[in-house]
View 1 (cartoon, each protein chain N blue to C red):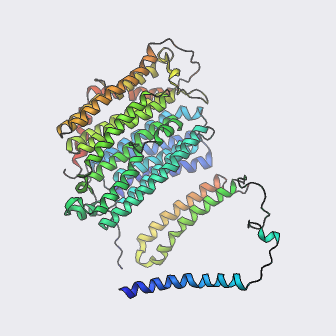
View 2: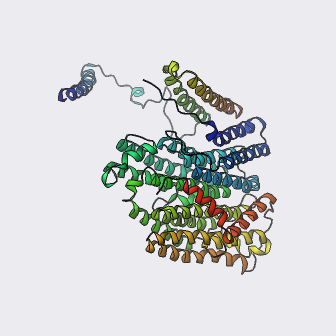
View 3: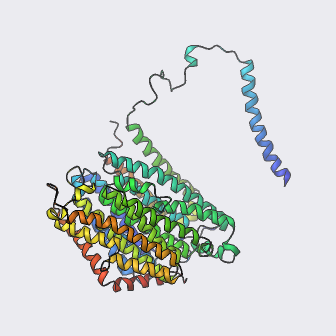
Length: 118
Length: 483
């Protein structure tokens, strides 16, 4: 029993050791040439400027919400796909009802104009 | 691995399916045709159809063993109550949302979704379904509370409700996980049998689990000390939604608590009586005392609804067959009173602004006799004056407490009713005994007035002749496992 847990502890130790070692070595061995651009905080290719509380278009929010909803819903297809044969006709019917409601949600979002990039 | 297929009983869940389909249809009709009237008609049709289906279910079915849902008289009773509450809310909203700039195409289907959440909540026989239906109810309510997008207070209320509600849900979920850890199941029936033979009401873990769940559920019924959100949210929400929130959602969670204490947690409950006693006394007293100080009618009624949650908690403390009947009676009566009170306020809305301040009600009876009369009947009933439904409700509640030996609790309840008389009668006095201030141009919506008048008559009828309702409630309670 103790050896069992020891293996897990060792795994954690090794998992901490190797990246730590690599980062440590690269700070010692690697060359450092600091330019002003490198010292800036990273912001996806743009020059960071102005306060953090900037306004940004609301359409990003809608797309993000849509993505979240459909992403999570589609996850339900995976267990069904794995157990497709065992669930047989019952599973198929359940998934058809589920897909119908997901489709209706998409239709609703479409008609509400969420998919248009305005 | 073999997969156990659930026994599909479509007839048992047909009303829920009807409500779901009509809610989705309502949303789609709104998206395609942009016709508020059509959405209203579809939503109302869905509610009425489900109501008829439930009426035909009365007295027929038992608990489905191993199923997620129970279909018995207890759940059918509450389902019918929720559908009636939803219908009343829709009728009271008809005039209001035209005036106050609510996004109406989503408003009615969301009421249906919230109602569906309540219906599934009282029927659930599994902790996971319970959690899902609470979330369905809450998420619909968050949106409904914030549906006046142009009004600052409505947004603020929705934000507060969402943040604190999410916090409460986290507690509830953690409690569920601990109960699952202690008993190895989420099914009510299996939890009960796992706890059945254990001394001291089961392992300590189960008590921590119950405490966590109580925080989550106590938040939803606005029980002191988890009531902080209620005045702000009730004040900021569109007024018909305030009525819906304070009656429907509260009653649904109360019905669930009663079932939980009756069925899976009947063994550990014996150690929780004192806690519920304290919660009941705190809710009644704080609600009534804080209501005395309010200058805003909606906030006053919000605190009064906290106090009423305290009254219903008396039945949770007493917890025998008689107390269950009293609880069901009080919840029904409270639903009517809450809808009437907030309905009357909603009818007094004028244009963008509403009349919340207590000064606006000065001399109201001279310009708006119907609203004033119905509101007065409702206030008398809330205070528990004889010949109104509120008196019958309180009478059964307090006598159940006395017969179970909680005389102190009953005395505190009666004292609290006496305190509440002051602010209820104060508002009545203002409407009748003072000269009118110039209140011009509030609407005279026919449907809303009719609905409120009907509710007012119902309060009086139940106050004088409650026995048919009591008979129905007796049958509903008889469906629960023996106490």
